[in-house]
Length: 229
Image (tube, rainbow, N blue to C red; front, side, top):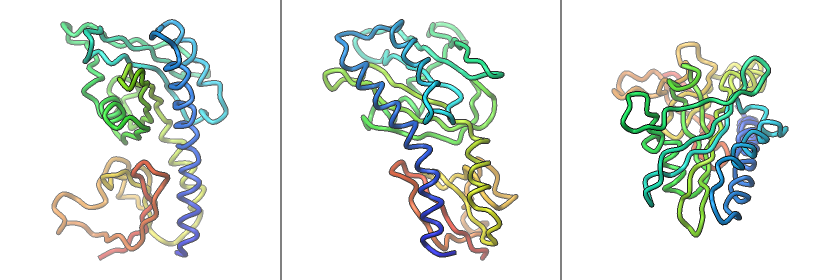
């Protein structure tokens, strides 16, 4: 497949993810400009995110307080699209209960906090939401260079797969959209379903070699053209 064709596919995917990242970044700056973290104000602001055109791939969005510093308590506001409506979703915030959602230990929160920039996590099973594979775009909210919390948006993975399928068209080449660990987001190979590694941990068992790779934006994703060994 010509390099420019793969680059075009990568640009299409990047545009969708970049749009979500841009919206989260803009909201993070607006929140950071305030002298304090007002959860009720943030609740309204995150709800409004879902009305933006470049957030059409987002099926959930919200904000989580960084409770690991300054003695803050865990707190999270979250909105989710469901059956054509937007509903508020609650998560367990009491560390002493079995239902506690320890979001600070998860990559979408921890990586955004540590890197102080946009992070794309997944695909992973969203056991606290859809019980299906999802991808999360997250962005830290910084106040005086400290992390006050993290904004995040869950991406509708089936829409990404559908858009990928349409973009690839009837190409005869075997290709995959993969994350930073070469875990499949979408592919043209029926046996390489979402979540699988294109190279198993036992590399000798792999039936594919990467013939060509093209970066998707700056978040570690790429499109790979595969060749059977």
